[in-house]
Length: 264
Image 1: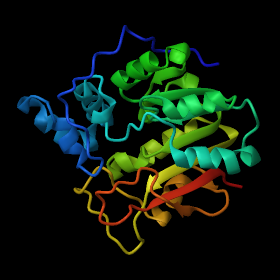
Image 2 (image 1 turned 135 degrees about the horizontal axis):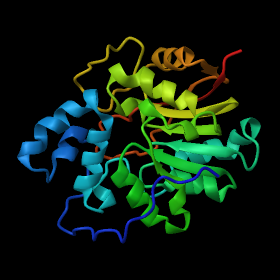
Image 3 (image 1 turned 90 degrees about the vertical axis):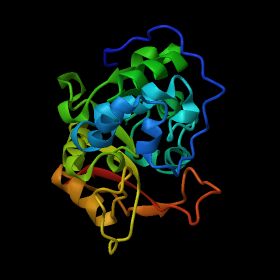
């Protein structure tokens, strides 16, 4: 197994009962700013374009140990990942294969892979998220690694048979997508597979680069991004039910799911 770069650093901070539960339809900038000193607002507004680390770190820091303040934290494995593992993974990835969870957050998807016998690690650009996940899952603390896909450590390059990418690409500014997808591709062995789950939009809908995160991707955009990194779809990309349905939504959000392998 890959050696760790992070170790747990004490006990989790107590969650404040006064903190509001996050509405996952809320703009992520507002969530990051909640409880943050006003002097830091400008950095949070700018950082989706300039530094994903600052943006995601601000959200995990401001959550103060309360997972309900992290909008994507369900404290359970993603249902779409579970369904994919049950139906499709065995056709693409051997038992016991090395796997990496991209943007592992609080670690529940990683725990699902470990439970199924994969030699898996999770990486996240937020050091606070990595420490938090290591405390939550102390028996697997060494499997959580702080790493930036845009500056991937050499020891993570070409190591994994499976990369699980859920909601990371959609959460970074579109100007950074090629760098992020390139980093994901670099984690793979020559026969590696990427499982992708992302918010999507219709091909005819233009993207507003100011209206995010998240920035949903069209089917064509997703294919083009991975093609530029040398990866092609394995089978059809398909729309799937919202893995986090909300009664507050006027209409269900569309998600796109698929797998990519080396072209040729």
